[in-house]
Amino acid sequence: MKTCKSPRKVLVAAYELAKLTLSDYSSKFSRQDFTLPQLFACLVLREHQKKSYLGLEALLEDSPSWRAAIGLARTPDSNTLWRAFPSLVKPRGFQRMLDQMVAEAKRRGLIRGRLKPVALDSTMFESHHVSRHFEKRQKQVARQNRKNHVRKRANRRRRAVHKRLPKLSLAVASASHIIMAARATTGSGGDQPFFEPLLREAHQRAKFRAAVSDAGFDSEANHRLARQELGVRSIIPPDAGRPTAQPASTYYRRLMQQRFRRQADQKCYGQRWQAETVNSMLKRNLGSALRARTARRRSKELLLRVVTHNLMILAAA
Image (cartoon, rainbow, N blue to C red; front, side, top):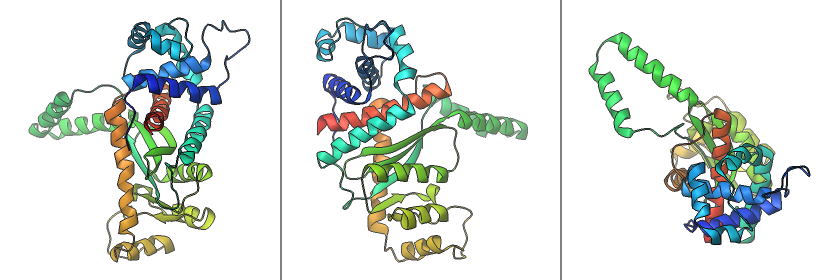
């Protein structure tokens, strides 16, 4: 699916979305120099253009037509934008925005749940910009040094880094790459706990017949939730845990073993790669590294990137 590269179109789309989901001002006692939808649109533009707050201020100052498109009489300074970020990007407001964007995608025919499955996946982001050359040289030095205590120290450092990495879990409409549900967390780990909230939220926004995901989401409880409670056909390879030739001890995981052995679910399962495509789109278009310095703000930044990704698709449709 094509994404919109025009900053002005994305800015206006973000402003229109925010007017539907945010109030004009946070308080009747505020200074009311800028409305909340205007500030939110500026934050989306920052993600779209991969700018710092100072860079965004300079960009808006040099673009009077962009400011006029969202009714800005003057440019908000970088400190105002930085302070507005945590109050504008909140989980509850994010859910309302996803509701509006998925409803608009359904109206335009971009989500076809009866024909295409929903794909679930997770991906890790960098907590800050990393030199790939430096990272490669670190691994080479660790391999060359054969002392056990040095290798153990390198492994401990690697584990400590993984515990701080931001993680984004998604439920994606495979027909259009629209993100229907998302969870932003910190640290690596199993994906099974994210299956239920992602599937429930996506199913509430648009009905679909099938959900596909990789073995990271494999569990009998997830199959029961999808098939018995929501009436969704779940297709997950039964590869979680240690490899074994023994059949699975639970009904749905054993069913998956049989169907994947006969390749009965391979065609529908092939749509799972659409979630990988969305992960790639997010990192190519908006960057693989985050700019926030705390875990809480990084999670909010990931949610803002989800909104920006959807707006780029809707603005190009």
